[in-house]
Length: 76
Image (cartoon, rainbow, N blue to C red; front, side, top):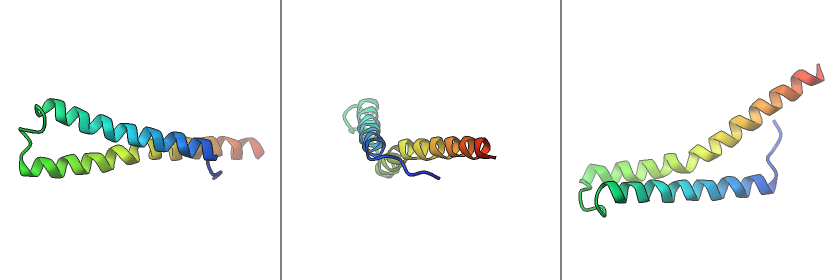
């Protein structure tokens, strides 16, 4: 599988950070400024931040994996 270029890695990093910001903002809005977050809710917030970070990276890896598959089919 080919490695993504430096530009693609930087774009994925920016989208990862933006998705974390979006997740935290959404939880803040829904919970009225985090005032309604219970103790377990903080774990959900932290877990959601991890998931939000890895979703853009997973999409990038899957995209490169699919493109690499088409390149291998074209070679044979």
